[in-house]
Image (cartoon, rainbow, N blue to C red; front, side):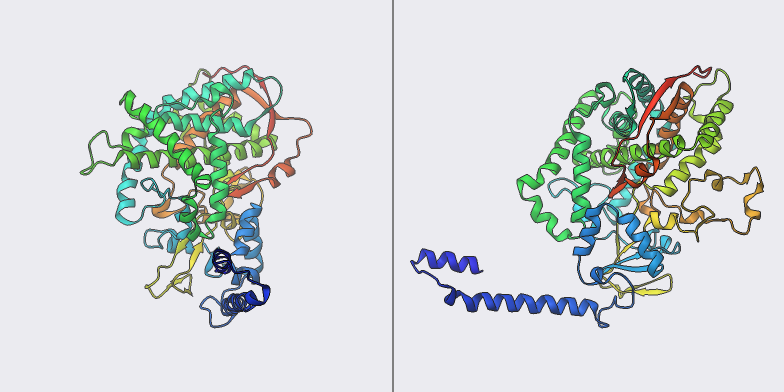
Length: 518
């Protein structure tokens, strides 16, 4: 308003002085000052419905604290420290709670739990149909039914050849790279090419090029950084989306999806890929989905599926390469299960890779791809909800952070902070784990793929993709980290911007080895 007054005065030929403006400036300062102090005082006072929940003082009265935490990329470790200090309920915002009690998982995330909060609004492109992540109620159920068909056992079998082609291409390409290779981007190339094949019938070819020539991966990383920050002030997302320079990431992602979708439609149904199921080419739905909604879901699969798979692969190989005993056990199991002349691409034998599966599970426990997760909301007008014996007022947004739950000694003990795959096996060399009174394994607290209706439908695909690549790499090559690799520095470099990712290279060498497996 003061700027409008100045402009009006200038237009009318007046020369406003400080004496004339002083009362206006003073009024505005007093008004907003008193308003701000009142809001802060209320949020800190016993009158606020969230007063009983402990937490950092700054978090209690301002979202600025949450935005700062998101900016650091260390939200997962900060929340872990807060729960260690304050207990299972921590107030992490004026109206935000983080709950680390495993009983909150079904209460908040389960089928009778809470709907998605405003956190997810920033993941919605206002100029395109909504994707699976932001849909609610019946719309979400209808769309998820298509996803379940596309990720069921029969569909996964259809994808085997696509994965095998990309896995073998990965082996060929890393062999051609001179000197040490940074596994982090190369796992990204592999995952993006796999998802591109399954959704759009190919087109990315990052493995072939040994680079992300279209800048898709960088675009997605930038998108995650921006949304992890903006999700704390979702009311600003729509206004920002109308500013061209801000909206360009949404526009570019949408154009990527539209371009590859057009190519997929042109090719037709040569195979039952994920697009086949999402567009319902089999004609099983009463009302077929629109092309626009499938493009939105396809883009979502690339953003959420490929990126998270690449991060988990990097974390898995980090743990394996820094522990020679575990490395040898995994390789020996693979060679035993497939035996001489065995086909490593025979996915029917992957269930027999018990120790490899335990290593993957332990990786997901220690470094879940989405370590804090999205918020759920106690809807206004419901009168609130009792969760784990505590009354939570309406309008509250709730985190149930996987990273905190999965490293809590109350859920996983001993060695809660260590990579110990044997915890997932019924027996160890020393006998039954269950006979040890200090042993705790609360499998219900393991939620790396979330829980309930919001659970990731592609979790089985991700495991199959990982097992195939691990089997091929470990039997064809001796892989080692380069001299001078600092494992503690690599582990501490992980940052969270919705998805967890390492910020420094995982440099390794590949040395071919003889293998009798095919």
